[in-house]
Figure (tube, rainbow, N blue to C red):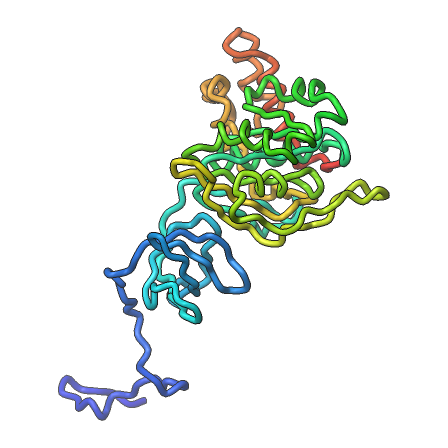
Length: 337
């Protein structure tokens, strides 16, 4: 083996060859101190549409970010051509820390989680009262994902002209979730959008719901200057709608002070493999204090859970504990049950 003394000539040092022949490899990454901040509006096949000041800029992720991906709602730092002109491309070099994350998995056995949207303040769960029939288990799963990710939930119930909302609202009454009830006529005429808008002003709101519930119709009414794809229909045989939105897209809320609407693709399942029960309990402050006596790694739905005694002593409403456990048990139940 060749050895080197203290006084070696540079020509004697063996260097690792660069196969591409462009420039030597280095572990030193550029700091890009002059990078401009932007917000990711949508992602399509590796190209990210970003808002930089008042310009729409197309960008791609820098190689130094590795496998870290930017999603809709992310605050990013960009360099390169930021003019927003046609056929120009900027580069995303940093992704800021996220204040909230809405995540899902393909199913409850899938270890790979997918980030749907970042930095949203609330999650609007759009559900039809009929045509298609409401799926409470899917609503439960969306609620768990919202509580786990740090988003405030909002229920938007559509097609009240076909069925009463009373039964569904009774199911979620103990959770104190704000809600809006609309009819098909109100959706078409825009009156529903006015009532929903009262909950959105100054916030970033992600809209989720399975196809055919009127989600995209509502988004079109909230953002009339940026209408999304044509709305779909409900299959009379399966009771399911056709996917009309294929990618998440952030749109500025009309007549709002900083409000944003994030329309997401219609969902047919919402896996919760990534959920940590210790984070969901934070959405129940009246119960959280009672977990201090729980055993380590308590699921809050087992024999030794301290919440049972906490509620029995009158510190919280038993209905609230039932609601918490119903949500936490959604991973063990199919969405159609």
